[in-house]
Image (tube, rainbow, N blue to C red):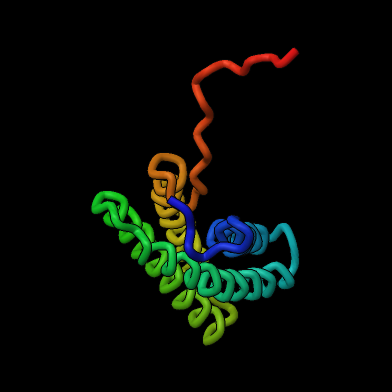
Length: 156
């Protein structure tokens, strides 16, 4: 089923989700580098800013994702889409709480890093459901014209 939130038959939601995914994972990597003292304080600060960028990117990706969700008519696909959406909203909530903790107590490392790890795990589960929507249910996939089963005849 084609995506109503698309440009030139290319759905917007899958184009945008790569940014928050990459930023949140990199933010966690920055936490690890800082926690294990493999780098200076810049890594702690970088974790904050990449996480904030991930939240902004996720909110941008949510708009076409919600438009796509509203177009689902199949009940099973809609249930999967709702699970995917609720997990993503949970993710954004986790990372907003994480950002607030980092902002209010910049020296704190352990709890924010643990929240990031939980967020990454939830991200994996949500990604599984998103892949179920696309690769199994065909969400956001433009229907292809069917080819005739008759072989082509050569014109001489």
